Length: 109
Image 1 (cartoon, one colour):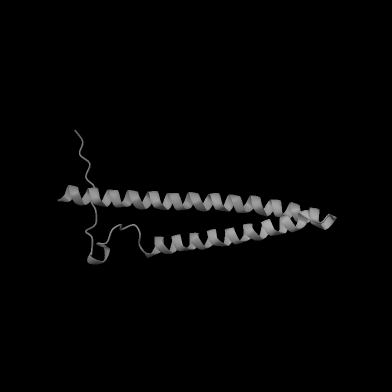
Image 2 (cartoon, helix red, strand yellow):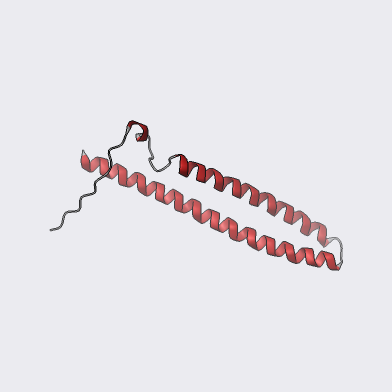
């Protein structure tokens, strides 16, 4: 029979708040992600306005603008998907870290 022992660092008074994984680095990372999402939403709104304006006029410039707008929309959608995936990964990792620490504390006690 094999025994697996997980050695966890003793929590200091500074790290006693739960969850431990949500330190200032991850929190600031989440803030950055929220800022990116807000910027993306603003860009999407601007793009929608440009498309609506472009629909009411017809010229070669408008066609070029529409192509550029479509490309920008595709890029924005990809960025939003990546941001959502990153947020989900951060939340899952933070939750896993909390579970590991709590289980470690229970096992140690």
